[in-house]
Length: 380
Image (cartoon, rainbow, N blue to C red; front, side, top):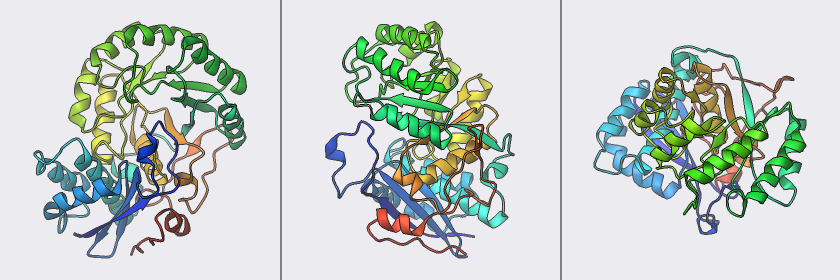
């Protein structure tokens, strides 16, 4: 079975807030792009890319000589060839992001052809459910608290709050936000905090991060995410050794090779690769295995789409070292793109789909709505 064509479905009109500069959110631009990979047998796989369609389209043009006609049922081998053949064309950037979506779609195809969930094809399922954490932005208007209350009603038993004014005003504001969040959800629900150190011109270093980590520990925060700039590995190493709670990071890194020194040097407690950026399922599975070898917990970064969430669920099912999955909420790129709403169990866990491929069905009307009228390609 060979790859016949690749088609983009750029998502527009409902990009979630996330620290983006407003100039990136014009109506004609987008930050999330779905990818369809079509085969010569009519089977179609779906992937997701965390970057704009303009960049993905450019990457596809570079990759096309190695992509069209390649095997559609050997995802790791096919995408590794794409990585290997494009060292001089922007590896680690838009090319790697685009390969991520292609890889997800190829695993989806292999699952459909074999009638198996991707997690089983990755080596086997260690779990049939996972605890999702609702991922929310901080603010001082009361919206954060209202969103947390709504999330509890939906069944969430873990929340991550981040960005907004945190680390951008003063210590009193930081603690007030965390205190309010803890009071809203109570002591029995898990709370995580994301400083958003990958924000432009992040102003803080090791001493701020350590002091803030000590404050967060007083509120029983489960982990402190991105407290430093994403390239400050030495700062992360010192903080991970000294902080009284786990330190998480890695969402902006791409390619497994970039993660190796972070894991070998124990620079973080929890590693957070993004399957829609890092190189896809093939690459992220290898990162998860390497993390497990170094006693680092695997927590996929999931600020993306329903397709990205589906891929994350397959990954955590097949990973030995996973406890949570990120669930962006509310998000129209998740809720409106799924044909069947996700239902959580009474204990706050999320059943992991066991259907073929990604195991979820996409809502044609939702995709048409957020792609300016584009229709999904029917799969054999």
